[in-house]
Length: 201
Image (cartoon, rainbow, N blue to C red):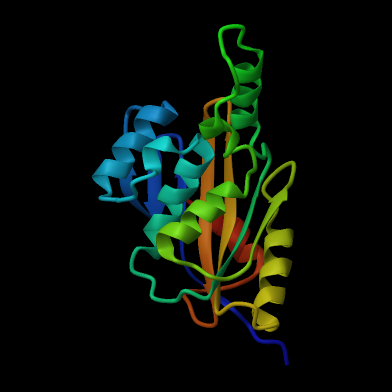
């Protein structure tokens, strides 16, 4: 009989609002991402020295992950993320720096974030996670890929828990939905549950 896994907790960040397990934990009238995420970072008491040097996608992912991992003792946790825009927002900035007639060379500080999975690296460093990670690019949020891949990782004992979800940033628009899957939790880990929780903000 297949093991049934559960969703322990989840969070959502979009349109100036941050919720955890369905409860609003931060809201700002300032929805422009740079100002919003900076205020959220300070208000929520997050501490990470590299935060202000990171690209927007990594800032979004780090804040969402921190809500779920700040008191998490399990380090054998895999990460399975997805989005629509990959790292296009940073890629554009990198391309602009190459084409800048006054620039001598592209900025390494920008170039380092021209892969979408770098945000998972930042999360892993901050929370000292030592398991596998995968980043999928889809046209829209799809529970199917996240569900199947996560169940496979847990069934093969590649990790004790999995931090999953959607982290998308492009042209100033931001949307993050992360959740932790484990053997025990509040919600049954199913495609239906994932889709339902994604709509919660």
